[in-house]
Amino acid sequence: MLLGIADLGLINLKLAPEYAEEQAKQSHVPGARPEGTTSAKASAPRPPATPTPSVAVAPPPQPTPTPEPPNAAPEPTATTSALPVVSAVATTPPAPTAEPPPAPVVSTGKPAAVSDILFEIDSNLLTLSSKSTLDEVLKQLKANPSLRIHLRGHSDQLGSREHNLELSRKRAAAVENFFHANGIPHSRITTEAVGGMKPADPTNTPTAWARNRRVEIEWR
Image (cartoon, rainbow, N blue to C red; front, side, top):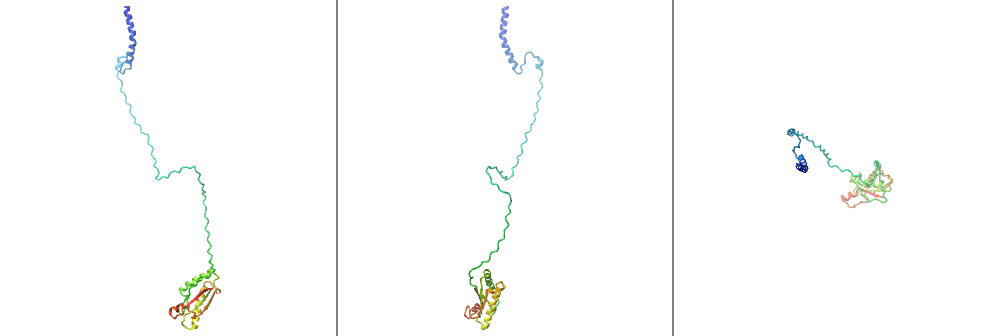
């Protein structure tokens, strides 16, 4: 009897670790009910799981892009090179000075020969064409105060000698009066009357007579 009990004790000692290990496995199995719990607790229904309402999270606002101005010029970049300093003080330009009038040109030599001053038949009146020649002579006399002129009056071969001589004198006087009226003194002008004795063209033709009715101007 004692031997049987002792054998049972040895058997229990050998099985004790195996039993403990089996209990530990059962405690980790889902749905396993550990020993020692009441049946009422095991049969109690679990409360239904309350679903958690999902909250929509608004995305963060995106920054509004700033439009760039059209054809924007690039900003100047700073340079390390030294630039010349320009003064901002406004300078007033000098007032223009009036140039003095040009001095009259004084000629040292005698001007070119002057065309004859022509007249109509039996007349001592100056024509428009002759006045243009006289204006040129007047300009030369004013430009060179040392110049003097000699006027020689002529006539054609028609008429008497006395008439032609008086007519040639009047023609020379008409030219002289023109220069006196424009500021040339008498001291710079001399006159002479020769009538028809020194014709420019000795032929007896209307063309020759028209050429001989004249006053010659000589520079002195």
